[in-house]
Image (cartoon, rainbow, N blue to C red; front, side, top):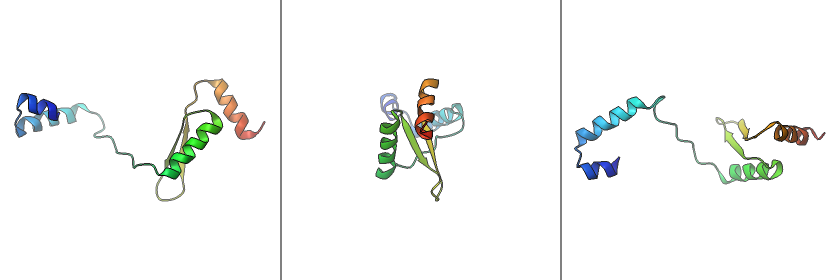
Length: 89
């Protein structure tokens, strides 16, 4: 947007109109910025990824110790492998 403003020598009012039209086009408003992950969280994700051989994402929720673990699984064979490792069967 800044590059365009410089190239086209847009006024502040022009930028406001452009910004307003972009805002109306996007759904759900601006995306929420995720807080930066701590080194401990990134280390846990890496350990999980190495143990399971899958991409893992750990999101801490709220102020407590509750968190959400997401694993990227391509197919049912990978899912079976994860279940097997988790249940030790």
